[in-house]
Image (tube, rainbow, N blue to C red; front, top):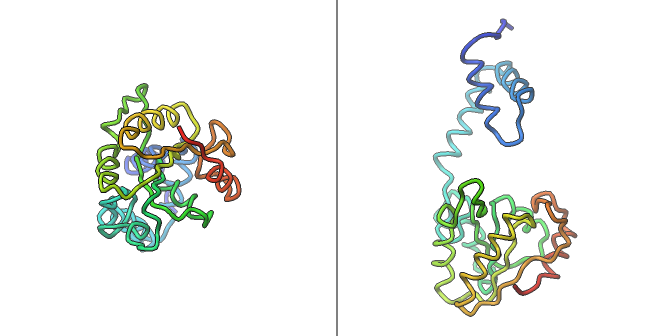
Length: 201
């Protein structure tokens, strides 16, 4: 393999990997060199998968989860309980709840949390879509399943104030989940306990 150091395309590749969450300079370099070591066909496959995902995956028109269709598989499933909606920050949180096999309701993905320090207000989240989705009157309970962080708590409180006039039961996950923890890393039992012990807010 030829010496890549100093090549501008390599620098650009490292910079792109560095932009990914949780990837530092050293990891970015390791990934870049790994990609360069791939046979050209594998590299094309990798690049193609990124482009394909970008072009084909969109937000579900009902819950804002990521999907290839108009409705995600959960919203399209007629056996789901439409009276309960679980509000999460990120599509990965849905995967965590689905692993419990205990939650049978629907979801709504905010795609972020209110964070004034980062310039993120309610208008940057899918709050309007949540309100529109609840306006059909089928939901009886909304579970605030944002992470137990300062931003997660602020977002849950804001949404609770917004939704209370709709006469819905608004609950918050119980703290089987440690404060400062991330839902996507919680095990099934912890998540199940958090769901079971949810409280009204």
